[in-house]
Image (cartoon, rainbow, N blue to C red; front, side):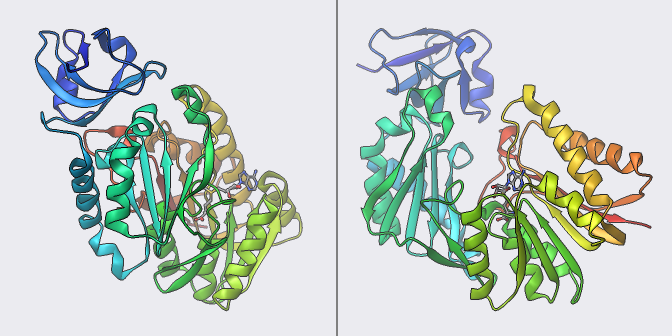
Length: 390
Ligand SMILES: C[S@@+](CC[C@H](N)C(=O)[O-])C[C@H]1O[C@@H](n2cnc3c(N)ncnc32)[C@H](O)[C@@H]1O
């Protein structure tokens, strides 16, 4: 017998219009047999079929939609989803051998992330539902990618809300300590075990390219919150002199190796941006281009005030070392900080210092991290490219 989750009156329209998450307070009733992580049908208030998806007994998201069709959710279902995701990313193969193949609900697979790095894959399972369906999707994924190895990076805090313990480890085949990938002809090193997220910030691919198109030989380039300095590799290849600040020693070491691999020099400073940046100013260093790419400091709307303060501070300190005519890319990867919020935060910082700025572009995440019109949260990366007038 089918297990089911019934919605309250007036809550079915958003599901029919492609919004895949049902919150706990939107649920009227669940069938007695349905358990945490179960595959179940979603019903409207009259008991009519709406979707297949997974039920969560613990998370604030009670149900995640997999399909609006009344169809079997089996191995073929997942094989088709993966195939479709791969087709939609065909255009990227000319540019890179590293893509995000599955971006959770933005690829109609809530709770699952799959990144492909050359002949290897890294997966992240974020929900109890996807965990319970593992036997249905893992084999089709192997069948499509035929990877030499698969590593799992499900070691994020969010799993706890789902009643899952964080996990990381090898799942299949072998995976080297460092995978070498290519992006726009440049070489990058991915440490899938010790790196952040799944090992590389694929979402910034287009922004790195944009920056490299603007940077000029001999310019002074500053890469803040650098990770392994991928922005710097692009800029240094264009002949810029690069300084990169990153707090983790092992990422700096990887970054140095990565720069060498590309035959360029990046001056890494291992330390806290909030301390190192003012020091650069007092050393008299000035820059033509500054990239500010902080981590997701705030996870929720409530924490946005602290993110705003952090961005205000780092933009202020950056403007103190940005030359007249210089450019600055200010990014935030927190959905809750929208465009107007980001613009206003930068405006306040610039106004305090009497610095006139122009917006040259507003950019977002790379296309293998799809932005679904019907899921506003799917656009999480916002970057402002600015130029200082004088
Ligand atoms: C979003 S990632 C940067 C990604 C990078 N721009 C790229 O394209 O690969 C943010 C980085 O900032 C680093 N970080 C976080 N807080 C920091 C701080 N206060 N000072 C220096 N680095 C910091 C993290 O370790 C992480 O590597």
